Image (cartoon, rainbow, N blue to C red; front, side, top):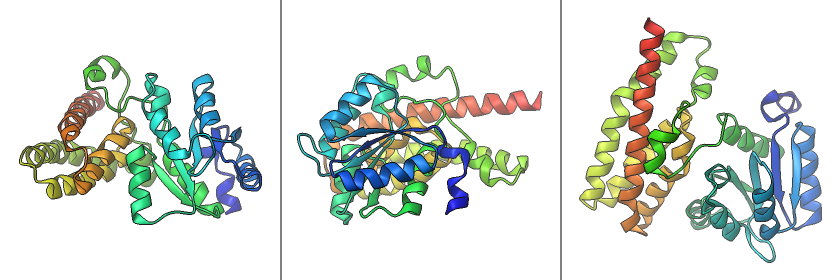
Length: 268
């Protein structure tokens, strides 16, 4: 693990650690600092929310059970912030409760990942790397009316694709082509099943899109597609699903346009 810890991926990342147990706090802080992270400490969810409002943070490690404001409630408030950059900060739950029902609750609240306590060094490192590796700049999550205006830069990030390509441009081009050919079709299937109120198929298509969206580094849809899957599975908050699918459709459409433009530029 020491070799991986020397990796530059986490160096200088600002991690907000929200944890009320001093021993756990010290242990996690020690690990994070050994990887070159800058650690900001919060003793409860209320402090965590205040710190996010007042400074720049790359990721939050959020204990679930804390006084004053617990991790789930703090996450829900963070996701509702008007500052979209702050609202989309990756949040990783720290908890001893990792059963299926618990994970669904964390997902619904807006958490991106979950690490079981006691914290395993390698799992923590991999979770941070996974959630930070493809993040260049914070992006929007669910503002379909702003997609065209605010997508001045690329809304996708091929870092993950490039990292596994072994330097093969052919592999990268094939992945991009497959995305352009298949994902818009999948989105239309998602719309159709939701319109038919076939929530089982809606959840399946959302699950299928989830990994593709993550692989292509489309951070603005990371939470949205998970909420569609979760709500459809649970048959909860169904009235909100169509609007979320519109967000997915708008962002994927913009992404396809940008990818086509990049292909054309590379061919000139």
